[in-house]
Image (cartoon, rainbow, N blue to C red; front, side):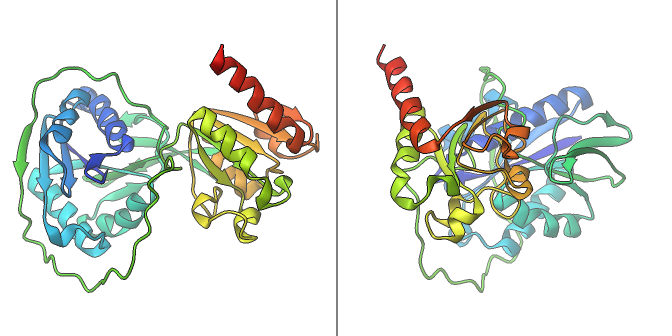
Length: 324
């Protein structure tokens, strides 16, 4: 049995989610006597690929083709499917992010594989194959049985965690040239890259603001606190709709779904659509002057007060701790 893990990279470095997926695969492999094969697409150096062995991969299939430098869903689906067929993979793991959500529906259809997105934990059973996932905006848990021989699972960032790396030698690295049609009809017109900020999808701490911030001119308080905590910044949908912050920072049911270790909601009321995007956070801290705001129903810790006054005090307290 083979578990194939799609390991995404940015600028030639494997993202944190890649090691989390391999860690998950290793746990499954220990219970099913399977081998873990990592798939890397893009220009990733050998040292970076070798790290996968420390988390549980025994082999790495690497594809470095200039025609794949642009993310074209149709081509990537064909390539991943070809590798899955070649490796006779029974379980295929992808991140539950923009990339995973773009690839998995087509990949499922191409391989005739059952798909469960946003898996919440290790499988409950392997025969039959049953996994858990959150449903109804995170209010319930569903036990999903996959009946197909092949299974495709996506794993949300920070939901499983990364195992402690072990020195397991070098994985077997195979350079692979796919037979799939590599031509694309997509032309890249322009690209704007975020280079000086922590990526929201990978952040372990997120500081988020809502309409209670009263305007974009007050966002310096959010950014200062985020800087102290080495955190990413985020916002609620009304904030992005008003143009106070970019849509890339919008978290919620219609935005990005995140699962940081710590989520600080500043001036966010806690509409159900917003809560759906942050309910998997390990710890939620809410700051709101309305003591009946829905956000307090899901928060682990709450501060009732004017966010304009609370945030500076919180920032000063953290500064004092860091300077002590």
